[in-house]
Each structure stands twice: as C-alpha cells, then as structure tokens.
Length: 551
Image 1 (tube, rainbow, N blue to C red):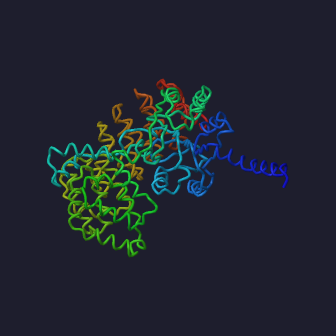
Image 2: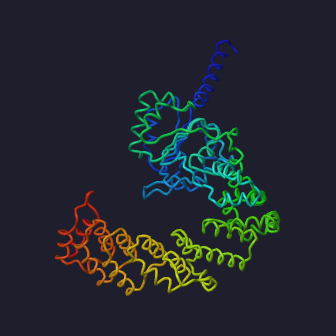
C-alpha cells in the first residue's frame, strides 16, 4: 500500500472513532418530568448541545417507565425531577390528564437494590423541583414510650435521655434524609426546604442563572452560591448525598434491607428477627417497614420452606414476644398499639382470640384514661368500617359517664346510645365536641331524613361561632335534600353575623337541590343581605348565579 493510501485509511479510521468519542464526551442530563416541563426546557435551551444531551426518562402511558429506563442503561450526569411533592411520598402532577407519578419508595428500591446504576452511579448533581424535597423536619420521633422501654430493658435513667435523642436522630427520616439516602454519594442535591416555586416561576429564575454564566457550573459537582442566592427567597437549599462515613451509615444500610429487591422474603424476615432480638425502641421506629414485610405474606409465600422456617423461628422466640407485647401495651398512641398487635398476629405471636382480647384491653384502657382523641375515633371507625369489631362492644367495661370523644369511639363500634350522644354533640357550643362528631360522621354519614331535619334545626339555633361553622360544614357533607331543612338554613342566612357562617350555609345549599327553594325573593335576599367578601368572589356568588338561572 502506498504512503498516500495508508494516510487515507488512517484518516478514515480516525474520523470514524472521533464521532463516538465526541458523543461520549457529552454529559447526559436525565429528566423526570411528571408535572411542569419549564425547568427541563430552560436547561435544554441554555446548555450547549455540543456539551449536553437530554434524555427524558418518563414514558407516557407506561407504568414501569423507571424500570424501563434502568434496563436501557442510560448513564446520567445530571438528574432533574419536576413534580409536586407536598406530602413527601411521591412526585405527582396536578394535570387531570397526567397518569405518571414517581413514588419515593420506587426511588428507594432502585437505589438500595443497585438495580439502576446508570441513572444513579455517576450523578454529579440532582435537581429536585418540588415543595419540601429537602425539608429537614423529622417525619418520625420517639415518644415517651421509647424512654420507658429503654428503662425496662435495663438502661440507667441517666442514659435514657441520651439514647432517646440518638434514636430520634437516627430515625428522623426527614425528606432531606430520604433524598440523601436515595442519592448516595452524589456531590450536590438541590431542593427546597419548604414551598417551591411553580414551574412558570422556576423556569425564568433558572434562565436568569444560566444567562449569568451558570451554564458553566452545571454538572460541576460543586454547590453553586449563585444558584442558591437566586432561588434563596423560594427556600432552595443544597445537600450532599449520604456516604459510608456518615454517623448514620449503619442505619441507612438497615433501612435499605427492607426495600432491596435482591433480598428474598426469607432474608427480610430473618433481618426482622434480628431486630426483634434487639432493642424494642429500635423495633418501634422500624414498625412501618416491618408492617410492609409481614402484610405482603400471602398463603403461598408463607408455605415456601425458607419463609416458613423464618416465621417459625420468630413465632417460637418467647423472649422477643414478651418484650414486644410489653412495648405494644405501653404505647402512648392507640394507633401504634393496634398496629403492633396486628404485626404480632401476622408473626404468629397472637391467635385471633388473643388479638381480640388485646384489642378489648387497649380500648378499655383508652376509655378509662379519658384521653380519647379525634385520631382514636378516626382509627376505630376505619378499623371497623365493615362492622367486624362490633362484637367487641359487649366485652368493654363501659361506665355511665362518657365524654363526646369516648361516645364517638363507642359509636364507631356500633353503640346506638353513643351514636345518639354524638349526633346531639354536633349542635354543641363546644368546637371540640363538634369536631368529634364531625370525625364520626365522616365514617358513618346520616341517611335518615328525620335525623337530618332535627340536626339542621338544632344548628340554626346555635350562636354564630367556629362550632356553628364546623357543624354547617359537616351537614354539607350529609347530602341534605329535605326542603324544610333547606328553608330553615336559608332563613338563617340573613341573620348570620359572620361571613364564615353565610359561606357555610351557601356550601350546603349549593350541594343540595337548591332549585326546590330558588324563588326570586330568596335570590334577592341572598344577594342583598350577604356580608361583604374580603377576598373577592366566593361560594355565595356562585350560589346566587345558579339560583337565578333556575328560578
């Protein structure tokens, strides 16, 4: 081959290699857009196409889009997640036509299982555009029962406060902690400690940052003071992903075991047994993931030899059982106690009869202490939605004197006399009593028109107050269609001295068959006697328009 021919061949080979290398040198910005695309579009406009490529991981209409992205082997240098995040459990959209969401548990599973190394392993920066994504407030905290458990297990009283504080710190499980765990070893995670700007605001802010030279900082792996200052008024903060050197690294590894898909069910049960043989205060803080493990045990799973062996080991661990039940019986919150009793049943520590006896004991103790709360009423009504717990009523030690809260709890268990007291409480001048009735009626709505008529009449006689507004709001959810009651409420409207009361009345009428009372004189009365709204048009205006159209 002549020298010239060799040169041509070598040049062609060099050219063929140079294009892939240039492409490989590009940094990949992965986006997960479950709501606003403003942030993604802004980055795409301002980051040079010669240096960055964009990959959207969400595949519309495909429920397993995250797993699909993991299997595709996409390698991300930057990850941008955009979506509402109000309750801290998932990124979601407020668009009615959107079906995609991103549960935090799915991210935890992918990270802990190392099943998505392309997306997670080489990240230099993560942008979490959602409210409270890096909120540091603890989602879990150790209550007084933790200290009492530590004393029972032999710790000196002087050490209890220190140990309780350590447990609180380890199990705080804030949104910030979760994101640091999910994006382990990532140098920079941007998010928001409280309310985040909507995409329409975040996009222009991000554009100002990129225009001012911020493009050079993207994917650097270093926190940008410029970006944090620009977004500072909207609560943007930065954090670093968790590392093996962190004080809580051991706890994070334990947490991962509950969601690691590489761990079999038997492995997870053996790990649960290890926890049960340890400090019960720690078991209490791991209650939620333990519940998820045992609640997933169907009959066929329980029958597999490895799972059956693991369950047998737990069921016959008498020492762990006694310490666990002692903690459950000492729990400050009824919900904690019932949840722990449910787990005990799933683990073979309590028979059905024993669970019933424990539940009766728990309810008796709660009623005897006169500390029944709205949360207790909500819990018992929820547990007894099918009436299965009604049989417990005959075993309870019911005393003659009952607060409204206690009566509401008994009414949730099917007591007719208690129910009558709760309905009467809806017209009480006490806002606390009305609230208890409201919680009960959310689970057991009134269907008898005569009862609704009596309640409506009683509510109209209440003095204007927060209790009356709450009672009216409760009545609005009872599907009031009785004409006599609607007329009485309409008559109360011009007498009301509070716009809150007037709005509550309008809320009832607009949900009812208002056409039955939509006379021109009533429409005129509503329009002329309404109190001035301090914040523009409200439900009263909507009601007047609808009644005008139907009269």
